[in-house]
Length: 269
Image 1 (tube, one colour):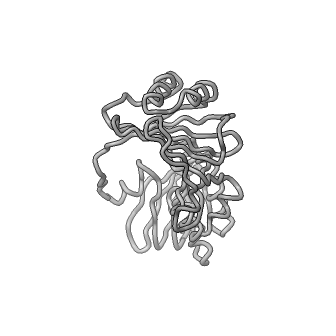
Image 2 (cartoon, rainbow, N blue to C red):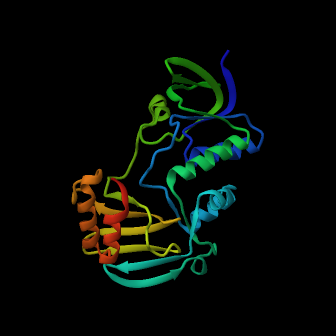
Image 3 (tube, helix red, strand yellow):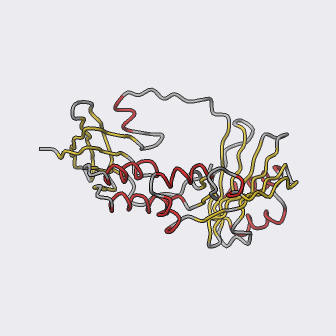
């Protein structure tokens, strides 16, 4: 006999873990299947604008993030190329009266998947979903260490990313806008910069944008957004010099560039 759940969530990231937490708190029997034993660094999903912080509050995860992994960013500086155009008090200038939040992506995922487990969800990590079979109930076939198991659920939700096994099993078509922009990022340690201020540099003539968001305790993420086809993708330590040069071209100040070179930990695009 296979196990029976009200909800099976495939993927334990921000969306999947939060959904599992909220549904488990209502008394439903919830299972989370996450393929990674340890979450990997990602160049995305590390900065919440005030409207996102407000949504996090409504979902009951704002306090968890704030207290365990997130860093408040109450100010954002905006630049047009290398000219400062605004030093914005974020909370005072948005309808939610909230600051931005920044965090290290794997730390955020650990906090939320633990919160789902604490809410009563059954969380299983290192589990690969091989197939999802529609039906009433639906069934999910998993593989782990050469063993296949099957669980059944009233509802299966796939939050398992670009190579979603849920999507492929269900035959859902991928619909997306043309890929116009790409983002590369560098994680920096011991960053000697204000920890209460994010920085966004927009270069309209080049169609590029750079950003630096502090994560607290000397950590910061630097991003470069560029149009598809204008740059070769950045990947690995060998591309760090090119990343720095392109940030300078966008408008990042020289004083920040020396920090990139000295403290950069890893680069991916």
